[in-house]
Image 1 (cartoon, one colour):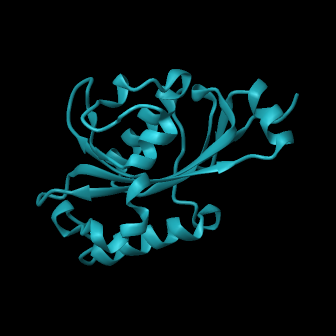
Image 2 (image 1 turned 30 degrees about the vertical axis):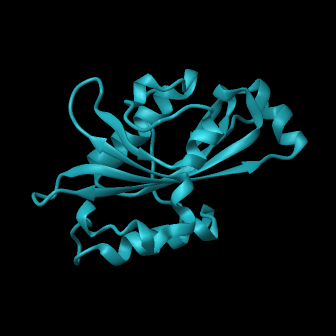
Length: 179
């Protein structure tokens, strides 16, 4: 899909995403990224079913799900825990997810957006995603915290998305405009 621009689009965030972002921000020490050891899952108990922790490594299996909530398994129809990004049946949206994780890892910055679940043959559902980096003691991103919501789309949006691939605009995936 080529180079994409991502950023944190606070005005496009859901209230629960802002809650997760606020908690992550509270873990920061000045300008430094928070460390995984500072994260206490109990602080976001209601959000855990659709949260994930993704290890950042090197090579083809660079992004591996250390932990994925049961809500993600239910939404995707498969277990994500222990699997590399490329081992999950993302279909044509695998490149989108690789780009999203690569951006967060390289920039050490949070990002959010929306993706329709076209690869799951569920055009009536959109995934609202938030990705937040954790760093090791040297300041390198070594893990990414994910939080997702799955929202129903109106029928008119379902028809439009069923025939068009998503396009990225300002960090938010949207349906391509009609020709």
